Image 1 (cartoon, rainbow, N blue to C red):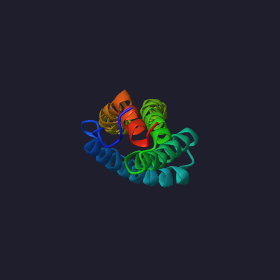
Image 2: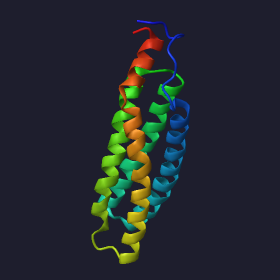
Image 3: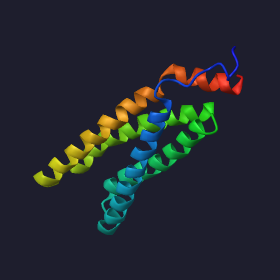
Image 4: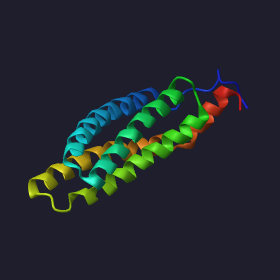
Length: 141
């Protein structure tokens, strides 16, 4: 296999890394504030869903850092899993809308569509085989 010096970064690597960081920063802020509000109300599934979103966001930042800075191939696997888990968790969070007002539903749907419109392309991008080849080449695997 060729040396890591001859291997160039996949197209969009740096930009999509930054987008992951920014998206997860917003996710951390929103899930953190949402979790504190939900804990006061005591809504079971909503607390679980929001808590899972918070854990996924923190783990995604750690995985992204490990991929971008440490060139870790196992972290790339985790990044992929976490991004798809975030997409799936977002879709499941629709279940929290039962009994909500029309205004709450409309606001939730708008934010969910925006979130998924960012998450799905990120998950697809980081799932590309070129990233695994790039990191493997850098590590000499």
